[in-house]
Length: 244
Length: 363
Image 1 (cartoon, each protein chain N blue to C red):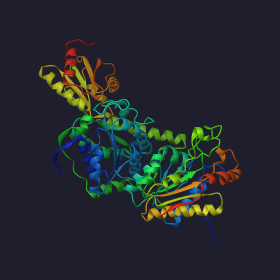
Image 2: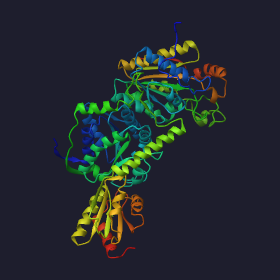
Image 3: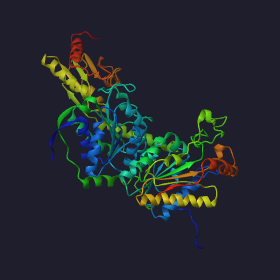
Image 4: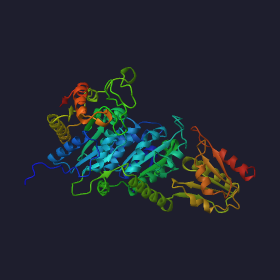
């Protein structure tokens, strides 16, 4: 029988350790499919962040290194500048990219590094157990904000895509989600565009994927999707912010 | 072919790195090592290399982590308080086995300290350069020539071991000007071959029928992490046998033995010459690698006649003292001669202390 759909060769078949309802698996699948479709999985290197995404290190079949917490964009800078023929992308969560790594994030974008940054924003720290993130919504409970995020104490959710959109150098900024098949397709296209930009030598591309964290949100996968659509996507509206 | 030139320490280190095949440097301004990034910013582009001024020491060391992970000979540098910021990235290099070379032109501390020369980072350099209990080969030059030679060698050692190597200088080594013979410039072909040899482990993009480049500073499996630590420990022990570099002077029947490294060793040597001219039997151990520490040199001391082993450092509290004591193994007396805060030890300080000891004034 003809196989009309198979798992991407960029996943080696090892068990993914992500929780039910988590969208990391979808994101890595899409990245892998794009790498294969562009024929560049043999020249790709991922700079993986610290956090839940680290669980992917045993399942990806392409080259990767794990960077210190928040430093992926700096490591990607060094790698890409010294190996311009390698397709270099970072894969980072919100704690990594938007909190501890904000300086590295902004400066790599501002230098217009020819890299692709994949930002997974689920508004919470996953691996460490549900602490407040820079992107945690107002009123959303976290283990370090048990009464919910209070703007008087914690400030407001950081909108990283919009912050990067203030800079001159980046060429492509889009916020997407994986909440339904249509948006999954849009996410795949965004990743493809980010990688193609790099192959074309255009410069810095930023793809923010707004996702859920059922485990640390304390919601079922189904209710998480609803929360994602009704709350997260309201705070972080989807769309292309820049496409030069 | 070699050529003799008159160069400042920092610039000589940078040139030696370029000649050794370093093609990536990232750094952040801090005194007294600014001449390294400044030199690299104009020199590296001439040889097809890359210079990046990072937004911080943290970013800079991680750029080096990335460049090193791609198999390029890479370097960063800083001074004391800036090295503290780099310690996370240095630990990651040690954990993920990414070769890199870095220089610490030490200044006063703790905290922001002073910008003048000190040796206040000995513990940090040799004992805990980051979390996780890793070790490094730490080269401690006493002259600009030695800084050049050690920098040149450092890249080979870093690549051999896939581990960071530290050039432990200080504000004097960094800013003094001396005549040096520069090592040969590696050709573009040699540099390319060195990088190609790293391809087997580097993250440059491997095809699916090759082994992937996988640089992990940690493991999900505790068993694998332990095995990794055991393998690293074997390497560290190997250094003790094979990689110790030391200068030993007049240890036979020495009644007093100086122990000093770097700039301090130059001053101590000057004091030694003065004392020996007066007929005193003074010897000296100068660690050129402070890690691995030249423990075996201390077995050459005749403790029946040696009144004291004098640890001389620009650090208060004394730090190398503890390695000296471990090496002496309670066979003889150990004392100290110290300055701190960016103040150089004066030859007179050492001579006075030596005379005090030799005249029997010290336990």
